[in-house]
Image (tube, rainbow, N blue to C red; front, side):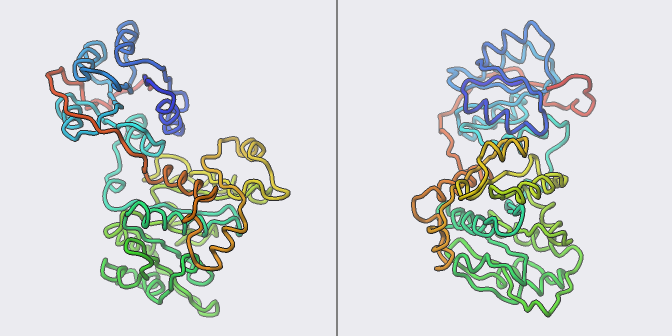
Length: 396
């Protein structure tokens, strides 16, 4: 069960847990109201409470601990970003996890999802940079344009060390989108993954800005490369040690290394345009199982909405039977001119830029939190969820 105090948090909580707990019960109530209600009913297996605006949040959590069972796993959201406050909740009180507002769907899924699924959080998901795999439902939907501009925004405007990775060494054009160069290092890495280390991937990359670089190749189509098994994993492992974000432009073709990159990503992004062919292929790609570190379904990006003869957003959502996460309006002149010049299309204010910012919020947790001061006080500890593996028969 979840208790939140505002509509935005309710939406983020519901959508972030939608894939793991489709029937989660969420009420618009404070922690005090939640405590009063839980006195009269059995404790849920997982409980989410909101301490926003509480003058004495630790005292409120103490009162809550008196009415819930010790093995209930308590997750807390609030408006305080103080690290000491976080430690008080998780170490002293035994709260399983704490997130501060504004919430992002992806962060909710990543941090709260494992508790609802009764499994520990994957340690691999917490070590190193974050991998985002951008895939198109079919050719020509704008996948490379979106991957390149997302990378530029993360590196240039958010100042995160970012690597744009284009594994298509024959016809890929991610580097060209940003005026970058290609090299021979990527092919060597794919053919001999034993040679991959941080120094290798650093030298193989071509810098674009201070915090953005690209790893891409440009091989002859008549010269087939022999991609070694495990090359994708070796590359991503080395890249994650060096970069905050690795954005991969993964073709949808059933090639082993492409599928490997898709499965190893932390978040998939599926790009489609408002055409029947794109819808058909999107449904096929959505059926691919999620990877071990993917806590939610692919982020759906509807590109070129409003193009002549295209479907409407409502028609696309009805066909997919799910909501579109990000919509990018049809702006052929701006995007086409930027691609020709090798410059980021999202640099200037426009509907395209708004779409890239919305995508960054979905995959990169770019929302700013609200800082607050310290809070102290004694409170009874929750059960820390130590019996999580033994619990059964109660739903969140």
